[in-house]
Image (tube, rainbow, N blue to C red):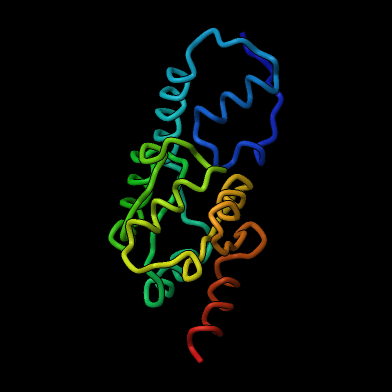
Amino acid sequence: DNIDLQYKYKDLAGLNTEEALKKIFETNQLKLADSITNLSAQKRKIALKIMRTDLKLMPDFDSFIQFAKQYFILSVVSSGSRESINFGLKKFKLHSLFVNIITNEDVKFAKPSPEGFLLSLESIEGIKKEEALIFEDADSGLEAARLAGIDVVDIRNLGWKQIEKILRTTFEK
């Protein structure tokens, strides 16, 4: 049986799989016939299968990250699984650019909790909130950055080329 589920992707973006499924079930007033953990595992398997063939870098991201590594200490904070994040970083040979990688396995609470961002900062000696800048692509991540008290750039409104251009004017004076 197929169920026509109602949800808006923007309401789920940035949530870990279990939180996203809970929100979908709640929105559609459904009772769980299967455990969310089991559904999450199935979803991760499907996502990794798709990633193996279809995952691509966002336009101009490679140029941006090569620029950014010259001026910033880089970290990944994601609601995704460690397996999927590591897969993407290795596929595009980006893993070595990041001093730490915080995934949903590292935190008790997913975004919009600021826990992941704060954990990342704590693990980088000498970096204060005021010196950090978050690049985020989901409402839950923007809220997490705000709750953490860290400046954030909503990358959905600007392309990586525009962001790089703005940062170049700041750092290459």
